[in-house]
Length: 510
Ligand SMILES: NC(=O)C1=CN([C@@H]2O[C@H](COP(=O)(O)OP(=O)(O)OC[C@H]3O[C@@H](n4cnc5c(N)ncnc54)[C@H](OP(=O)(O)O)[C@@H]3O)[C@@H](O)[C@H]2O)C=CC1
Ligand SMILES: O=C(CO)[C@H](O)[C@H](O)COP(=O)(O)O
Image (cartoon, rainbow, N blue to C red; front, side, top):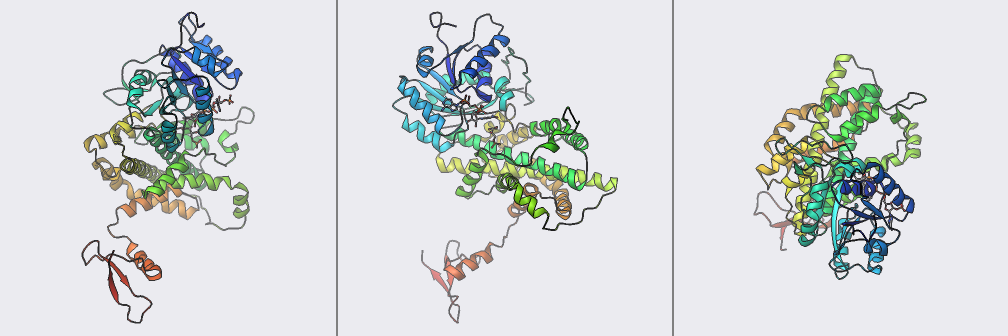
């Protein structure tokens, strides 16, 4: 492709796992791309891949070796997509593009997992240089290639320009069933169906929603890992047996992409020794920050998200491999005993229900968090639409997201998913099995922090009276922090003069 013939529709910076695939997806949908990466090898690899996949007869990707060249190859006003690590790289590129002559009516779309506060700050900071728009992406490399879930936010003017492109490249669901429409072949495009993208709100809102998506992703993954741990170490099942169980579960309400890939992982054997690869993978989990940010935001807003926080802690504990190895030789656990087959089957069924209930809690926490954040930051978030765009393309895609969509379509003001009729029924029917699974795992000494903290969340939420009365008294005792009384006018503050002999209760004027 040369500049003399035509200019490209979109500039693309960052051709890593996501970027390369997003470019090919855009190209399949008829957009010509001017592409740049710090590594020329990646630019050349993309062009080579496009040559293999491109059936149009004309090149679709123009490789650039500088920011100036990238701008010179684009139609004006310029539209540039970034797919780079969060943090400094985004600012470095923005500064480089300013140096290369980007204009105030040009649009830069940040598709990385940027911290939402950075996005808010950047929109302001670069206002006079260009329009910063953000659109978090989920779906991993296959999603990026064949249809991700896209969470755009920022200037509505920019969205008007981005929308047709985003709707073209996003994953699609069947309008009637809400089920994903499969797209697996290069060159294939899907023009019908509902696109998994919707305008989320002002700057930062999309990145916040993606952050919570990832927090839920952490919880979902940890819940599956805990079930695997129980099945492996308490029931002593093989990876293939666990894969069979997960595969069966994946046909019911737990049907999800994460469970599906877990089955594939569990079945995968090394070529040389035919050992399940998963058993050879070091048990130290990595994390890039989005789960932590979700947990931090939940603490800041005072919105409980213990399943998500526990999933972050589980990754942290896993990273202390040497310490755990030391402790495992010193600290005692229960004696594990083999169970008869019939009892095993019961435990497996209980575990299924425990996973399902914990999953409901994780999503309830994530959606409530988004609701409170929306209130705090003045975003009007549409939860039915958010659930809809997570039905396909993204990592947490699952049949379950249709039930969440239904819940918010029935009541857009729902305070917590656990109060939706469908989820009330699911929880009420399964809570006993959930408890039994937790008792079993605990008595076997298997750590199940996500499953059990979810149960504590559930039990706390359904407790009309919590022991916070005693806690308030303790606070008043040591720090005169005051308390309210249930037998007096709401809002009135009391303090007991604990250090005096008479311990008089006095009314405190606020
Ligand atoms: N991987 C995933 O599943 C998902 C990732 N994301 C997010 O998408 C973004 C990209 O992720 P991913 O593709 O996995 O990451 P990669 O590390 O695979 O790719 C990032 C690319 O950005 C380039 N880059 C880094 N710094 C700069 C810079 N200062 N200037 C120009 N280019 C730069 C890198 O260049 P080079 O290495 O050649 O120097 C690399 O090609 C991240 O924000 C990530 O969090 C979002 C959803 C899913
Ligand atoms: O955004 C994503 C998926 O939705 C990325 O894959 C992200 O990197 C996952 O987070 P972590 O690396 O912390 O597990």
